Image 1 (tube, rainbow, N blue to C red):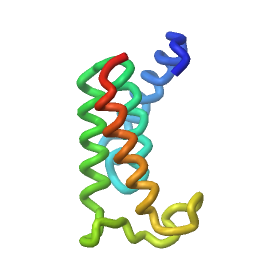
Image 2: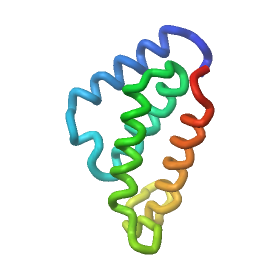
Image 3: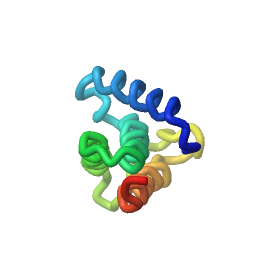
Image 4: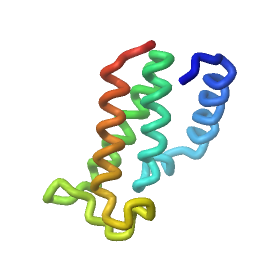
Length: 104
């Protein structure tokens, strides 16, 4: 975010660590953070592997969306004290905005 290369390398290293966890990082609502990190790295680096990770995280989130277009997991968001619809919508929007911005 601030243009310092040391932080980019740290983000890449952290992402590589979570990738070693395998498919588990794309299951459940926790994958929203994987997608968030991948979206930022895709924009900053332009690397395809991060873009692919964003698409996988988004697909996982959408696969558990309810028929009404929501994510009715009551209490699923401790921050919002409600279902996770707002939070999932926020993450998907963030992914789209980062990818649309393209490499910096």
